[in-house]
Image (cartoon, rainbow, N blue to C red; front, side, top):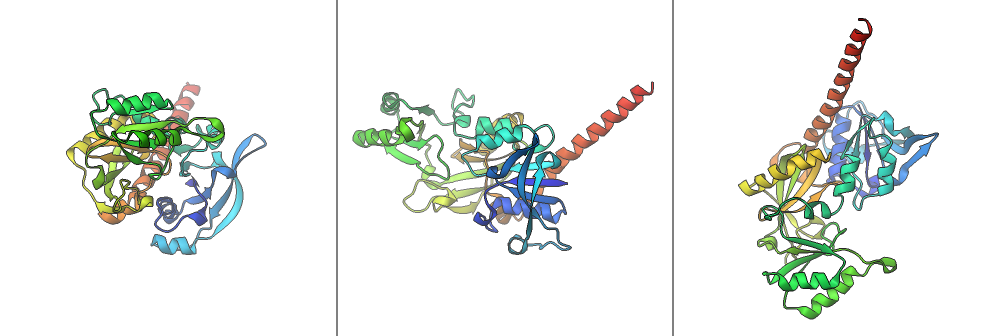
Length: 342
């Protein structure tokens, strides 16, 4: 098969990177593999294409990702996106809406993971905040607004002495802080800082119920086609509420609890319905905090901690979708021929 990874620049990755692991798995399977970036997409003669780096096939592909990463060689070529069977959208957030507009033209020709419309709907924290959970069974009480007066009222009326404040479009734990209800002056200045945006345009702020146990870290669950593939716990660095690995957190092996499995069962069908086949869930004490749909990480971590191959499962799934579609087209053509000959 022909597989394209739309990602960040290859030189910014390393052999512990989830996308690199997936590229390696595709190369091991002798697929034609190309990588590109959102900024390398183009339209030429009404054909959506990309300036790609195509993996040069070798007689023998290194079995270890670290060796593959060091030895892999590319050749540059402009290629039509409709010529690929699978496109993995692995660019880092925030999502590039122009790139999605390019991909709209080929979404009926190529299996894209994740679906373009799903990425549009779920690329920020509103996707989780707006999930239908009236009794806050799996989603903590969440408020999103640019209105400082309203947000101050939310904090004042909260029964909790602590809440979480974060920017709507933050990533990697950036901007996530704990606020104390009685620190009125600090809250005022923090809201001013978070709401103040570029060029005079205000930014959205999230105020969220503080979930007890947050100081002990969160659980990252990787979901494939609505089902959990595996998980690990991220433990915050000392004196830090953020458990993101990019913020100094560490990983520990983790088995899903009954409540965490329930979260996956509830959110899973919506993910599939929205075309979000491969995502990362962040869960704290049984509450879903975020759904990561842009380049979710953890493939290497879960594989190593559980002695499994998450990348292989992802490729198996995507290949299966393509094969099933091709078989369906063949059956349709056969049935059409039968009718034509009647």
